[in-house]
Image 1 (cartoon, rainbow, N blue to C red):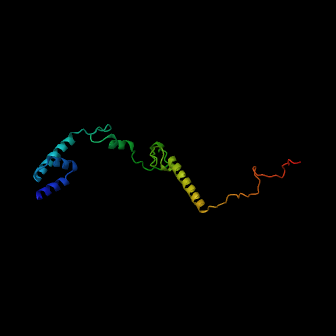
Image 2 (tube, rainbow, N blue to C red):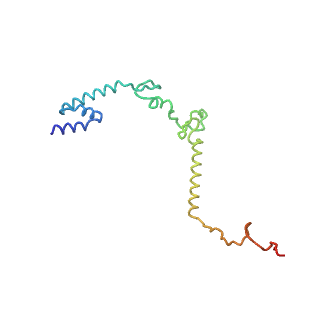
Length: 166
């Protein structure tokens, strides 16, 4: 009974794949279960080592793909550009890098995308404020009454109609 409990507890503590393989072999004792688990673990490790790992086409090293390559990040992310006063004549715009839109040629203070987004956000915020203010000052004008005396093209008046008896 105690041996069965130990065997059950051992199989629960294994990785699910190993646990399934151990239970399928139906070991008679805890020692048998441990040996089966060790054999299965060795087989799985061999299979893992022999499987073909992806080889990066950027750096040529195995174990990662192009999207995970560190060399790619080094190529695409420019080094930190030190701040240089604008009055410097030896400094040209190709050295500038914008941290907002991630483009070269300008910095964040000159970024057109940032200016556009800020203006758009400010416009939306002012529109929302206007709408909220209007919601607090709603005035209700009732519709015109049906007995409105002003003439309409469909009103009936017999004042100037010639009579047929005449």
